[in-house]
Length: 441
Image 1 (cartoon, one colour):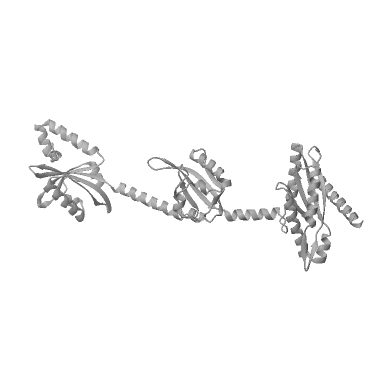
Image 2 (tube, rainbow, N blue to C red):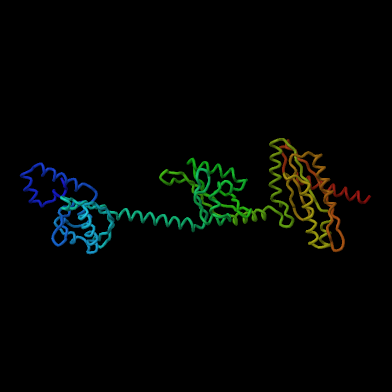
């Protein structure tokens, strides 16, 4: 039964119901169904002068239009331009007796709404007797789509123009997205960064730490905020960055990605290194200073006692250093000190500690060294210093130094750093005195 047959006036329905109770029941049921659906439904019949009369409309449509619709002319409930658009489609649907679905706009309480309208002609003998319209309000959908577009645009702008590096890493560790700041920091094109595993951009000394951190983030064990790590640049150098890593899921397949954010801290690390150098190095010679020597000696004593080992301290004093300064000036004296540090550092092991104690005095800590080896190293030091030739005007200045040796034994529980330094200093003076006597003879 065509739906249009159930859209007569109430009086007509009451009259028909006396003759056909079954029809009355079906009509009531259909009207109930119309009122329960979420889409707007209405029925139109052609009226005089090319108008269209709304003979039925469900509650959804009436609520959307914010007015009663039954018995109203379609031209009375729509703005003129909106009515003309729909009227043209109605006439075409009526001529062709074919349904039509299209999008249009309607104005309600001063606000425009986009709708999808489906018109179904109810035809008899090739002529349209009525039209059933189904209205789906698209305004919320369109608004949500626009909001999503706006959100994506805001994200894209924030991503591209962020002052820090941002990248999305896949489980294979290749970036799927890289922003300009990261490319700029690494001095590499964006596309090249997306074509390789990010592991290849990590400094070799930091690579294992990065891999372990990334594994824990991908498995959901933890996040990281501010890992200090080195990244390799396109020019062959590297930069220090503070790196944050967190897990996210995206897309219909719920793909896992790690959001990596990097902040260039190279300047800070360089400043820290410079402060450390100033705090631990002698500003003139570049050797360790007294502060480092004292700390290293305490550590050496502790290691010797823990593992029952021996070690030694060599105390170096430049011969006639005050006379050199007084005669040739501090510039020459400074040159003597620098040259001494260079040659003595060259004969020591990387594990040994060499420091300037003050003035023309130096000291070296030799761990895991017995007396015989320490004496050999002291003699190598004397010979290396004696081989120095420092230019002074048109002549060469001979350089000499006295070196005292003091061995310490981890078996001595009462061992102290002050005692070792005192004994090494006294040994140096004994060696200096002996050298003078040999020179006098």
